[in-house]
Amino acid sequence: MGHPAIPCSLVPVNKEDKEILRNLLEKYLYEFTQYEQRAVNRLGLFGYDYLDNYWTESNRWAFFIRAGDELAGFAMVNDFQESPVEKTDFALAEFFVMYKYRRQGIGHWAATALFDRFPGLWQLKCHPLNVPALHFWQTVVSEYSGGDGKQIEDLPGSEYPDGSSGVVFVFRSRKDA
Image (tube, rainbow, N blue to C red; front, side, top):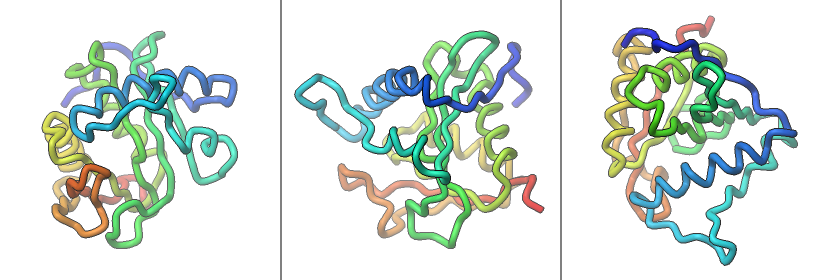
C-alpha cells in the first residue's frame, strides 16, 4: 500500500494527555464489544485497567496517531508476552484508527512506523471474529515481514475473555540489527 495522502505522525502520549487517550480507549473498547460482548461498569464506561501503567512503567509506550493536525487513533506497545509463543521483544497491546481515517493507508503507515521504532521480535493478537482487523494485520504483517511472519491459530493461552482463541502474529522488525 502506498503512503497516505495526508502526512502522518506517531506522537508519544504525554501524561498530561492521558485523558485524551482514555477517551479514545472508550471508543475503541465500545467498538470491540461486537466481538467480546463486554459490559460497561456502573458509570457507563469500559475502563482500561493498565492505562496509568503507561506512565509508571518503563516497558510500556503509548502513541497518538495523527493525520495532519488531526487525531486519528492510537497505538500502545509493551514488552509483555501476551501469547505463549517464542520469546518476543514487543507486543502490540492496542491499536485503533477511527473510522474517518480507515482505508486511507494511515493505519498501515502507523503500524510500519511503530514496528520500525522498536527493533526486535514482535507479536500481536487479533480476535478471530474481527474480520476487518484480521485482514488488515494479515496484509500488514505479510508486507512488512516480506512473507516471513507467522500466523498462529488456536494457540493455547491466547484466548480472549469470551473464550475465542486469538490469531497471533509473530514477525521481526525490519530495523532489527
